[in-house]
Image 1 (cartoon, rainbow, N blue to C red):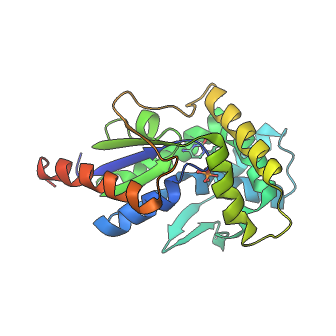
Image 2: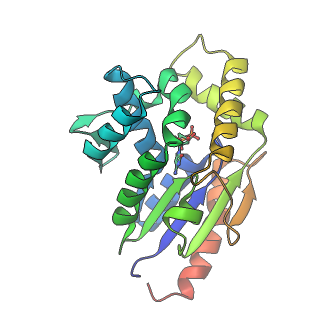
Amino acid sequence: MCGFQIAIDGPAGAGKSTIAKKIAAKLNYIYIDTGAMYRALTYTILEKKISIENVDAIINLAENCVIEFRNKDIIINNKKVTEEIRIQQVNEKVSYIAQIAEVRKILVNTQKKIALNNNIVMDGRDIGTIVLPKANLKFFLTASVKERAKRRYNEMKTKNNSIDFNKVLEEIRKRDKIDENRKCSPLARADDAVTIDTTGLNIAEVVDSILITVKDALKDSSV
Ligand code: CDP
């Protein structure tokens, strides 16, 4: 395996994407937000008005769609959906789509291919366990559910003033429950992952602590 792979997993709103993005920028590595891939697929399912019960149609769509990252954008079948994938309807449905084993197989394969021979920071739910089990470094970010809901609420409030905190909290709880309990590659901490509880820590503090570990590991590696 060439390249240095960093896996960052954790539940909704633990700060993975923000932190992974900053780590990748500091190291000049590729950054892959795997949640954005599940979200892009979910958005397209909603757009095409496919029922989330219609598993065959969903699998067919997953098999036939092309998901790409271009610069800071996520593209599905040549359509930029960077902003659209963050809407509430996608938040509510994405975990149902992500629990379909065939869908995961397709997206996990794509993720493995992207990571192959690259210096990469990848974040998600199953990166350290399933996608990149041999990653050079694995981190598991957590925070209390209240803190995670507060962060997501503040983030969403800048775009939508009528957002309700309790609804956000409920949605995060529901998503965590589905993600942790699904049969196929559930949200889980890899045995060799470093756990960071980010409750009460700011972004810079988490980034610095990860970078110290990365720099130590890079000294010992041939990359
Ligand atoms: O950013 P946030 O914490 O809201 O979640 P995300 O990383 O955008 O992921 C959205 C959803 O996609 C998760 O709740 C999971 O259901 C699913 N997902 C997954 O199953 N496996 C991954 N590797 C990444 C995301």
